Image 1: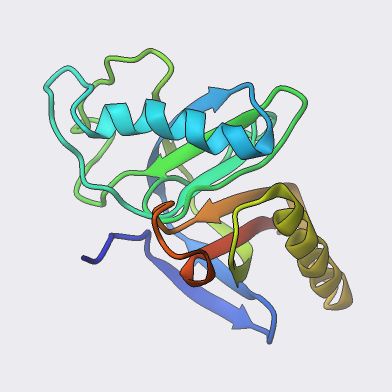
Image 2 (image 1 turned 90 degrees about the vertical axis):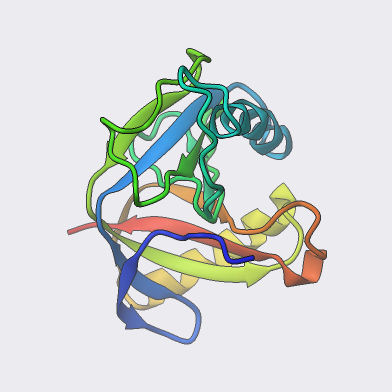
Length: 187
């Protein structure tokens, strides 16, 4: 079954990454104080509660990808369509689910859980590095280093902290998982 993902246009592409432009995206997000490996699981339960009917109208909202995870210090992230994104700070992580395109901030149901916030992300341009495999912190850091070297080689300036975007269920066979690292491109 296909899962909705946010629309984007590819601005440029290299052998190791691409530059994408995303339009405004509405996200449901939560902040958790946990390490890299636990943050996604803890936040997923909170956000899944919201989309599975934990809201004022008991409305079920379709899953999307990616789920994004980023440092709480960052104010902009992208949400749960597919992927889940991840960024780290001393205070934990901000995890976002992208909401389906059919919703606006006015039409989304109000969350029952005060830890869930709804927000519209602005249009932004991001450099995206795609890889498969495990969701471990060590693999993420290895791929982030590879990505940053490629960006530096091409003189691409970024801002903010990296986001870890997950597109698949934890039940997906590890070598078929689609993972991405997103870095916002400086204007």
